[in-house]
Length: 443
Ligand code: AMP
Image 1 (cartoon, rainbow, N blue to C red):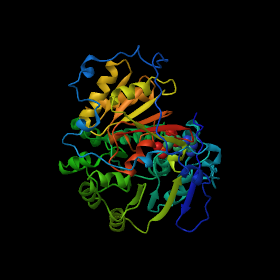
Image 2 (cartoon, helix red, strand yellow; image 1 turned 90 degrees about the vertical axis):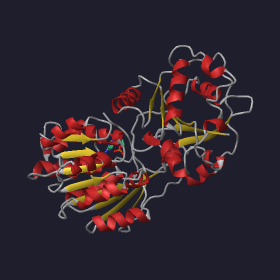
Image 3 (cartoon, protein in one colour; image 1 turned 180 degrees about the horizontal axis):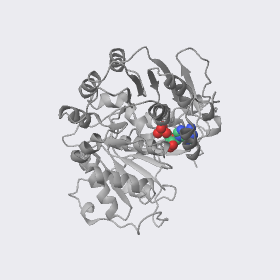
Image 4 (tube, rainbow, N blue to C red; image 1 turned 180 degrees about the vertical axis):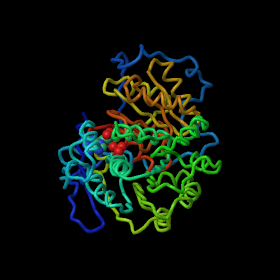
């Protein structure tokens, strides 16, 4: 049973009053000190067999883990290291959001209400509390909300209801990453148990033939990534004319990833008479343009969590000239408190090499990046979620949207491209009001 509690600073554009997160000033009082990495020789090794040093990375010629050389040919990000140091705000300082509704108050069919209860959801999160009534009224919605705020259920619940009570209803959900599409599909299946609702995932990296045959079965929900969806449309295998509801999840991320043309093409193929639910962590001018041309008098619901990073103790790790980056990382990972660690690297190759090296050193590690086949990406994520792995090395493909329980540490082994990416990366820890730690390697 889920028992996550959600706190938030909320604003609805209609001008409702909102509660403030009182923790801010405390958190801004950052302790600007250099991280001290304990010399943990002989300390407890929390996972895997006893770590051993790899011969291949010990030699003087190896350039792995030596900051500057690894970036040969890749533009290196530069950012003020002080941005990565911040004390966590004690959880108790963050005010609880008081929901106006209970799930039982919503005009939902009984089957769905039972499934919501079975999933352990009792009280709607702020975005659910505010968006579900509008969605049930058939309004277009712009939801300004990050992952971790419960936004999946905010759109899935009203859409399942719509499909169940209506006739020939079809929904298209577009997400930036394959993992997010799978996550949404999983949630959809849980909420629509025994309701005869079918879904298909149309994502890149998976066999298109299977997707084509599944889509021909006329599922009510199609969940996919923009490139693959467009491919299916172009091949004439996915007819979008009868889609009555569309969700664009993480719009800002999709635009960052260069999916704007795919999205425009898909949207322009849809019927005018549809309901559109767009979710984005931010609303940039580009997103505004998209919204204006593709939405119908939308209601804006803006929900900001107590900035995710408030729950996250942030610090930097400086690698001395006499040390190798990989060895410093090793020293951190063998600390007992590093129970479940997500490590971010910049390049696919770097992430793969890092994962291999950590495996050699005895850590239970895998990787997620764009060069890895989809089934292997999914397996790595599943194993990490189930705690079969304690360390996951990833590119920014895992920075957004993924909901992984109990990540104790996010380590930025390589600097993120920009501060926004940093916030998304560290948002993988300190979720659901838990404490997390983010460590950023700086040279
Ligand atoms: P999301 O932002 O949709 O990725 O959701 C973040 C996490 O919150 C997921 O683990 C959800 O299962 C959980 N969650 C969403 N809504 C609720 C709710 N009303 N009550 C309890 N947990 C929830």
